[in-house]
Image (cartoon, rainbow, N blue to C red; front, side):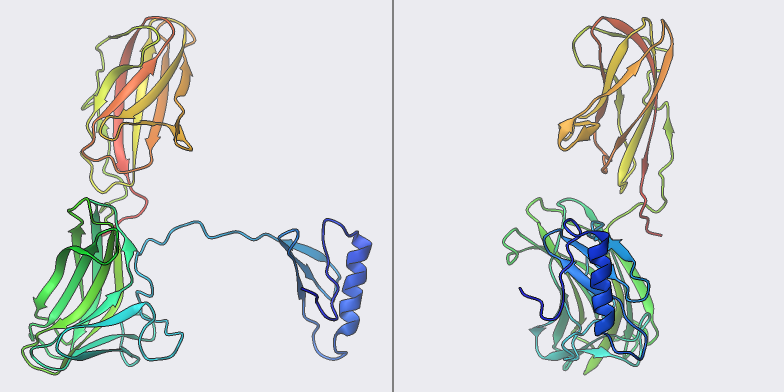
Length: 367
């Protein structure tokens, strides 16, 4: 597309003199009074951005870095602060009148965090009214941490309800549901409630959170909700601690034949809700040799370490007979309840002594 009244600067074809000349051109086009502003010139061919400063004529390259880190919270607009179309209903949330009538609006007079919260109202004692989140992907048989702040219009009105729906791959067939709270007796002050829910069926592929007022004892009645969290359950502490020598073969020699992956230790992780797992082990061999080592997750039939889906065993060497080698192998997932095999491969028969230490770790935690 042609740019009227503006020169296009392409960094891979123009010299510094060209850039300075363009900067001078831009400076002359600006008003004589006021502070000159920087002009941003987009170079679509080079897929880069350059800034021309009208004061010092410097040329600055700006790196464009995509967002690659996933959000911990699976819910969009979980604090109800965004209402782009200004219709009074928070973006990414939908009214679901399961039974009877009710409403869903933003409340700007109260809230735990931010400037506003969600207000769900049931018109009659027979009404069940929900605010539904957008769908999010779930991992089958994984546990999900759900936390919500809520405040009731009336105390002990048996109306607080929070629900998670699990859907099949078609995104429409309800597969299972789990009540976080049902007919709860809330207070007229802000309360926080949390629960862990499990997608128990392997066919559950998607989920959504429902916040609602369910058949209140006295109606009409409303409930305020704010700062909702739904994420994969994490550990209560960053590390489950080491499990030293519990599954090790310390002091027991293991004979390993040549040219065959051989299991020299079995590890049974008991930690839960860990995001990654570490196996440390000492090897002592009776000959000077280079040895390959790996962890086989026998439950999932996957070996670690791996890169781009390909097994990449580590190499270690023994400088002489009965020299030791220490290796740490990370497993970037939750392997609680799995069976892990520490395996080695050599080109000649070797007898090993081995000692293992292993533990789970989670950078994200829930208190």
